[in-house]
Amino acid sequence: MSELVSIMLLNVVVIAAMFALFWAVCVAMRDCTPVDSLWALGMAVVAVATFVYTGGGTERRIALTAICVVWAVRLGGYLLWRWRDHGPDRRYVRMMEKAKQDKGWGYGYAALRLVFLLQMPLLWLVCLPVQLGQIPAGPGTLGVLGWIGVGVSVFGIGFESLADWQLLRFKKNPATAGQVMDKGLWRYTRHPNYFGDACVWWGLFLIAAETPLGLLSVVGPIYLVFTLTRWSGIPTVEYRLKKTRPAYAEYARRTSGFLPWPPKPPQAD
Image 1 (cartoon, helix red, strand yellow):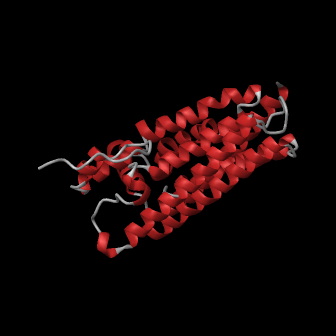
Image 2 (image 1 turned 180 degrees about the vertical axis):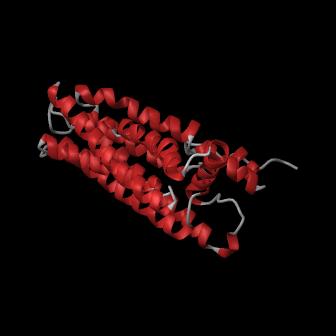
Image 3 (image 1 turned 45 degrees about the vertical axis):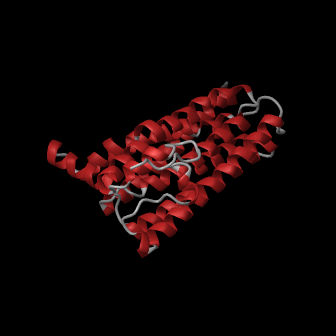
């Protein structure tokens, strides 16, 4: 129990330090967009910090940490590149402008209260599998469930990466400007990147679930799926697309919202 408390407190301090640093940088730039990359990269730091604190060395710790780091570097790097290529995220721009106009808040206070203080505990919650799963309890070698988890996570990383690559090519093609992406993986789910993300963290949970404490980390992937499908993921993206892409309504009608599934046939005229 003492090790559990020590690891949890350690990671709270690590996460708070990362968010404080990013908050200062974002306030200086007047742009909160980089916090999205921290959502991924911060989890890798937490996984590595836990690995080092617990002594590492076992199959389970190596699997949890390695998968988390690969996922985080890929996604965090992609989000940083997208920020540099696309510029500030309109969500954060509107959020900061509204806080100034409606409440009179300065940029630093608004960013701290509306973005950083909100996301900090949520990052800690989602990455519970790579924290609790590394605490010594049960065998350090992977069993059948653990190896299934490795497979699910690797599949998720590949699925998410392919979806991002397909969307990037689509957006960079002048011939498809203003159109709705409905090719490749996007033919079977409107949000293949989110589905891949969920697979990664459910896989990490399966690896962690071979230990008693790891079973408790199920709240992490449950919350992640909730936020992707019901809160800040799909609802936010689709609200904007339905307003800016007239063809999106028909695409949404025939295409699964989250789980990949064959599309429905076109509506008859």
